[in-house]
Amino acid sequence: MITAGIDMGSRSVKVVLLEEIKVDGAPQLNYSVKKAHLMMPGDIDADQAAEKAFTEALAAAGVSRDQVTSVFATGAGRKQVEFATEGVTEMTAGAKGAVFMYPQARTVVDVGAEEGRGIKTDSDGKAIDFAGNEKCAAGAGSFAEAMSRALQMSLKEFGEASLRSDKSIPMNAQCTVFAESEVVSLIHSATPKEDIAKAVLDAVASRVCAMVRRVGIEGNVVLIGGMVHNPGFVASLKNAMDVDQVLLPDLPEFVSALGCALIAAERQH
Amino acid sequence: MIANYGYKDGSGEYYISIDTDKCIDCAANRACLTACPKEMFEMITDDYDDEVAWVKKSNTRTLAYDCAECKPAGGHTSLPCTTACTPGAIKHSW
Image (tube, rainbow over all chains, first blue to last red; front, side, top):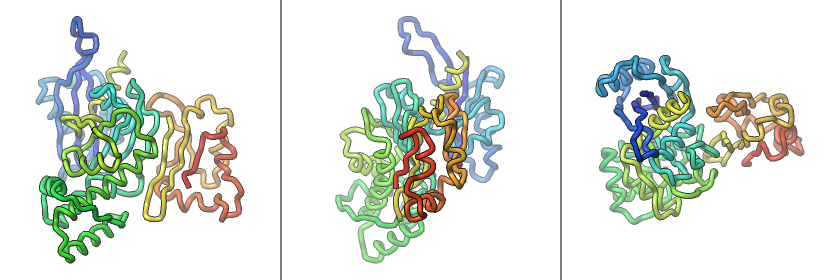
């Protein structure tokens, strides 16, 4: 049985094809990822992006559409995936995928391009408490991206630069527009770029942390979503949450799509 | 599940928490739906196939304003939603 999970994010589409397997003597190995595929929608329509990403993922895995028994969608644009069997929220998908990868995880922090959220989960990967920020993108990746542009740095340089700073400069603005104005003021006052980068990432981490604290930090913490690729943010988040360790998946942007595919497989039984 | 709907901005933290476990076999006969003057609550079937209440998407970004008339400054001594609902099932963070 092959199921598909599609995470229709605001910036990119992620597809995971999951195959149910039976390994003798290893009952815990029930599923294997057949193929994961990511596509940036770019200038094409969001509803077409899902179709294109799914078609490309099938081709890459050498699987025909008929072999996929169920397709579940999640993410901000999940309702635009017209061929999906069902849709689930980002919280449900994120919790399921994170606990599949890290069975000991009980707190999931999901920081994507446009939204961040904290999720508390049980041992089955069922979300039992969640909080996000419905209004503001200042606790998400696009905020860091906008600020890196203001500093004329790539996102990679931005994240690495922040690690070279040991200064703690508070950023008071909650809004991206006003925060950019604060960044410009810091540039004009000859503040080193690495200190500004750290100030921005500390501010994002602080907002994400406020959401996570609303649900409570319990057990192992796993961070999922594209911001895992920003080492400066990871360091700032660890510091803000005051935890020794944050678990980081290898392919963090695919965790919700994986969760989706797992839920699709479970509902087949 | 405790579902927190709302946001934090420069003026404060505005979240409505719903203990959706208490929506299953609701003891208050879905009173939240009619108690809110803004009709912010709605019943949905969640991802675990339970019929639960949530805050409508159109209100989650404007809670500070939408709930203002039910706060003490609006002349209310208690919130209509929390009073009508099963005790402890709906909470406001502010």
